[in-house]
Length: 217
Image 1: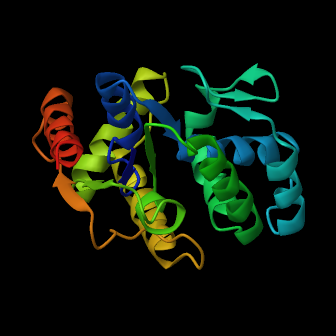
Image 2: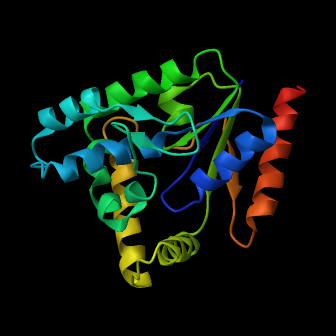
């Protein structure tokens, strides 16, 4: 069974999707981490972000291992580094690159083949797994999402201004929604869950209930 969880930046998809997978005994695929890893590879190589072909080469040559609890890029654990604000700001170049997207979508389908898996991102229920049995669209108000992002960065020792994060997030929402390939969209058959005012435990309980309804249908 494939469970897709899509939603905008800062909706808390990664952490809750991982917990959902653990609760269900499913595997977990963090597709956002894949785009962040490609962006990090480009950042380290001081790439010209207008050089789209080179970024595609990076996507094809990158060895991205998401099989454990960590994100391994070319043999190195980059789990924390890919979540930095610096990487967040350039990930859009990987996400909007048609060639990078085609390569990573191919990998995502390959990874999920024949498995019970929870997969999260922006286009999982629309583009990557349009026939998934259970689709969830996880979202929250822009202010709530910005507050969570500021909190997450603070835990990593990065002090950032709330208004700056809110502005960057709004810009990213626009870019994600207007992207030519794999835009951020709620699949027609997805269940929307708005998480404002909910604790992570409450969100988890809600999502488990949704998946179980599909399992027992």
